[in-house]
Length: 104
Length: 141
Image 1: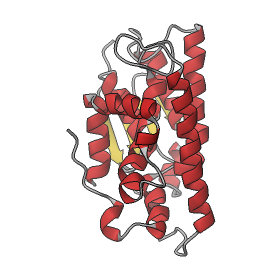
Image 2: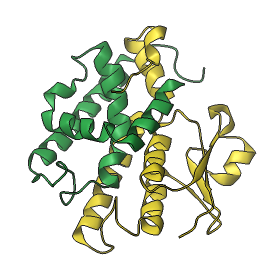
Image 3: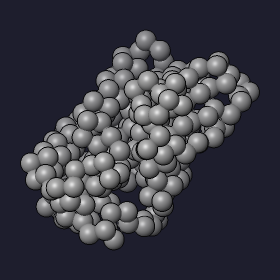
């Protein structure tokens, strides 16, 4: 194992803090967008590569960190992000890609 | 446009590969994913593909182009293959630049902290997870 074998509380704390900070930025932006015909998106009221680029990372936090400890990361605290994320996870392209990642 | 299969080299667990895989699926582009082990990315064979020794990297036989860095790969795929703008915006429009802005934010804001699932889960496992929870089997409704 090439990674640190010791616990690194400061690194973990920074990690969790940064994840929440980035999610807050997304939450604020999404809350200010007009809904398009198929949902609320980061740019131009339209689903784009910009939206989907965030999905894998949020999925990891949502499924791993939040399932272990809601205090660390809880999408319920970010209702606009949650709705946006859930609508992308429902797409077959996203679902298949993420299932393949987690299955291993 | 008829396309030959694009080859993508990555460890299947990397989050960056997932981003690229979603774009390939959304654009319905034929592709093959070669599973590269983390242990091999600093070896000469992979360094010939990406001198930075990180994944993913793609090779597009239609243009004989090899590219690495997931953000650049996504920009390439949508610019070349998303002619109907299913996932993108007209070149030169404000929306096109705003979409790039968010993509760069994703890459630079998250990448340094969360480049790879294995890194993340290793760190997280030190924090809170027991082994059984590191890679939960997920069910998607």
